[in-house]
Length: 147
Image (cartoon, rainbow, N blue to C red; front, side):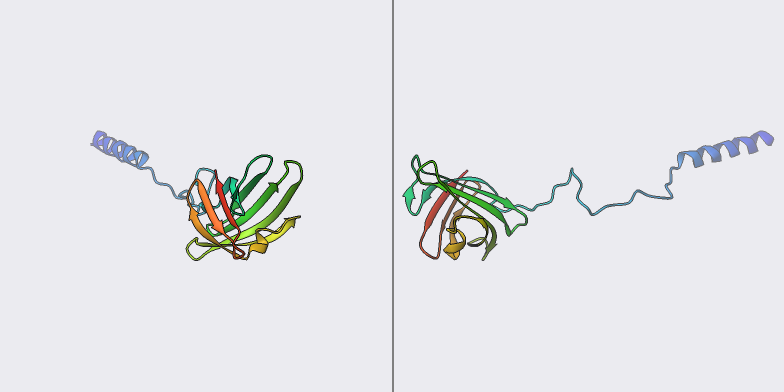
């Protein structure tokens, strides 16, 4: 009988030891970690090269870049740099807001010596893909950019 009680006690102890319960489960976090990126991008985000400015093809020594950083799915900041002679650079830093299902964009100048983006009023986005943006300002300035 003692053997039966000892065997039963041993089986119970073994069952208890195998049953892993945690009294303090690991907390779940809703904060993104480095392995879980947040989607703060929009199609404007990226480094763009202007191919057409004011409806004219850009050829050397003329050059222009448009570097956009998204801070949400509908906005961000941009740094525009254009040179007409390869030496003197005109720059404009601005924030931007996309609206009307990504068919309009408005720029608000934050720095630089140029105001073509912010001075253009509401821009109509004619095409916006992963590699091309074509847009026209309220003043009929036409720009095409590619990645």
